[in-house]
Length: 302
Image (cartoon, rainbow, N blue to C red; front, side, top):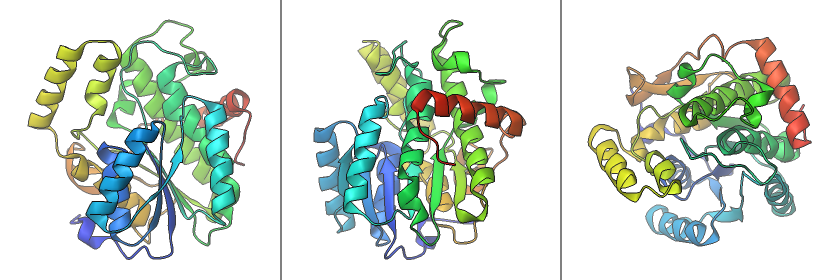
């Protein structure tokens, strides 16, 4: 498949929300949507970084995004963000569930969930559910959930993983959070039917701040700098890493349940259809995860 951002159709009149858009793939996603005339809201937890990102996006795209404060590790913050958006907009055409944390030291969300599963999956699950009334007002609503090829490294997920009851292994937890993203994406597609397009994407190996963030949280600044430098040498750019998300967000004929990743061995290059693992495609596991997530967050989309 030959594709670039030049192939993105005009997005005039489309309201889009991108989480984690202050840097990396989220920033690149928001930038290209703005360049194609979408009305974009960037959602992130640090107001100063959000303001800086909004200013840079405005300078580069010639269009200003709106902003909303959102901490996915705090379900009350998720609720407040959704309420604020409902006061401002009459519909939401596109939600890009992009934000995430990777390989962090053991931390908990405000509600006591393991940070990676709590942020990457539960926060986005709750956000999607709370924004569903706005999505239902759009003619062709779409939700894109960003996963990772790291979902292939784990064989399942359980309710106990929400709190790391069996012990914490940072890369295993990250893989499970990314598996949860795909299980959620596919179950949302099944439940929504033809009322909404639910698609997934993964960036391959892209150079973003995400790789070094875990070491920074652990206070290992030298390790973070080395990891960041090594990543920049071998990975594709964050802008290229955003291509699968942008394809999933804007391709007019995309089928619900599609999963998109880089074309060259799943690591880099133009986007093409990707195949989740059989575990990610397990509808019974997806139903159980959905039920656990409703119990954990107190909200349900369908």
